[in-house]
Image 1: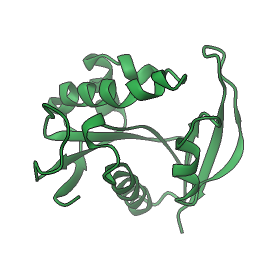
Image 2 (image 1 turned 180 degrees about the vertical axis):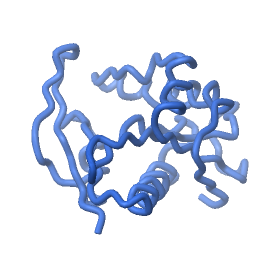
Image 3 (image 1 turned 90 degrees about the horizontal axis):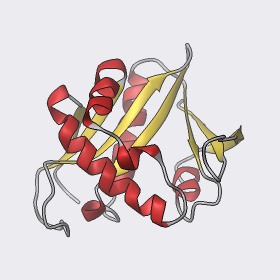
Length: 166
């Protein structure tokens, strides 16, 4: 994949991010791991952009896209400072037409770079431990399990994965 650009989201990106999240998180529901991002509304995404750091990935090329229609924004991720030295990474989503092309890994790398540039030393996230590929995706990039994250509102729990950014 060439031509990927990662930048901070703007309010005008909210509608495109909603389409990305609805597309990206549909697969999790089908795998038995429904997540709120699959049905997120534009107003909520605008709040994320206002209150946190949200990064979007855009593709400068149209080559390789399998979707019938994809907005310029093809992926997104939310970053939230949760302590003096910690940032929570959440809502990493890649439009289904772009999955399997390295977009998620590149976006994660750029998010970690941004976290490091802003002086934070640890990034953490939660994910279902039984998910068929998400825990391995993060472990392959240096994340380690540091705890459990029980969910009262789902039929499954999650684990906490952390990575030191040295």
